[in-house]
Length: 89
Image 1: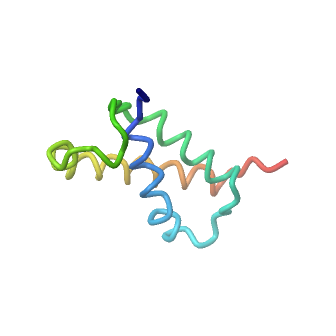
Image 2 (image 1 turned 30 degrees about the vertical axis):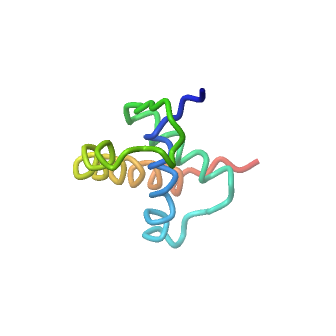
């Protein structure tokens, strides 16, 4: 059985929506991974023990609202940090 971090899946899912608000931000893999890492370090993990396709609608409905707002807030903060200070080689 595999353990999934549902938070990571949702943060990745919302990343492009947030980056659309930052047209001047770099969208290379390194910068996007930096944004993901910063955001995930500021959000609590939500581990589940079943494949994402089997996640019940009950779990998803419990996590909507504030859950999504928290993700968008942390992704926005992370995007601002990385946009101002990209760490390219």
